[in-house]
Length: 157
Image 1 (tube, rainbow, N blue to C red):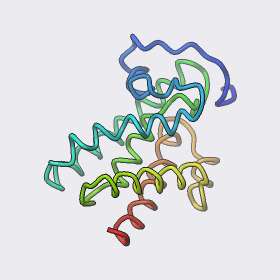
Image 2 (cartoon, rainbow, N blue to C red; image 1 turned 90 degrees about the vertical axis):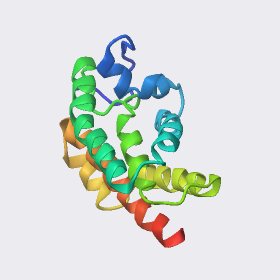
Image 3 (cartoon, helix red, strand yellow; image 1 turned 180 degrees about the horizontal axis):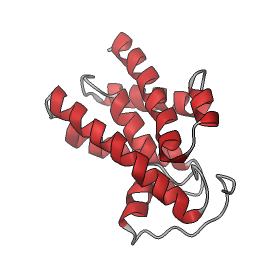
Image 4 (tube, one colour; image 1 turned 60 degrees about the horizontal axis):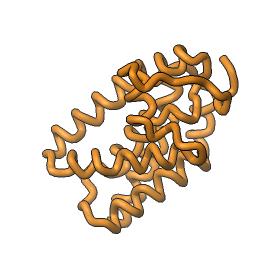
C-alpha cells in the first residue's frame, strides 16, 4: 500500500467510504483528522443524552464496525490509514467523552486532549500505530488515544 498522504480518488457515493471519510470531513486539505474530530462533535452531542450503557454499546458498535469500514476504505484506495479516513477519530472522540458532563468547556477540552494524544502518539499509542495493520490497526491507535484522553477528562471533570 502507498503512503498515507498519497492523492487518491475517494467516492463519497460509496457508503463505506462516506462513513470512513467522516461524511466528507476527512477530505479537508489540511488537518483532516482535526476536521474529522470536529465532525464527530455534533454526533456526540446527539448521543450525550443516552444512558451510559446505551452510549457504551453504540461506541462499541462504532469501534467494531470501524475495523471493517476503515480497512475496506483503505483497501479500496490502496493506502493504509490514509489521512482522509477519519472514522477512527469519531470513535476516539466518543471514547474521550464517555460519562463526562456535557458543557462547552468539557467538549473543548475533550477535543483538544484527544487531538493531542492522536497527533503526538505517546507510547504505547505509537507502537500500535506502527505495528498494527488493516482496519484494526487504523482503529486501535485512536481507541488508545481516546482512552488516554478519557482518563485525563475524568481527572479534570
